[in-house]
Image 1: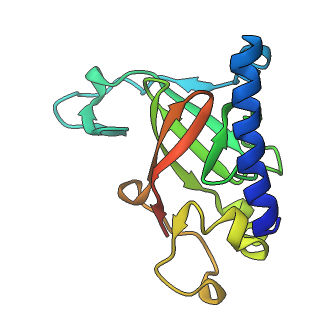
Image 2 (image 1 turned 180 degrees about the horizontal axis):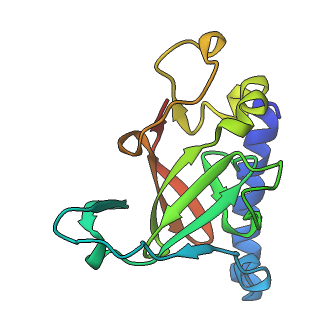
Length: 165
């Protein structure tokens, strides 16, 4: 995908939003996202912590974590209705994790690195900051502290902070 095509997708998203407001319909209502949910396993809340979108909280206080899987980004974010049903889908490039359905964290997957490198201006650079030149990026090493943050607004996951690879 070229930079022009990425810009075109962003403009089309804007047109879709205007049309949805005019007609009172929504792509989100027509094709609901398919989250993958799980609850953290039981453990001692005083010693084990799991990440959530606001930092680290005891497991006993953690809400159900939902994961959404996305392929090609739509500009600098993801259209909620473009959620893929499974991480096993070969088109998946990114994972968005959320506990409240509005605020989330995201990260790229190693399995999509080859695709992201070939179209870095559209697939990688709008969402991620690189710690080394693209030519030297052989694998994706990313810790939870380096995940990017997103906000769901009008059916679009907007990148608030890029992830750091």
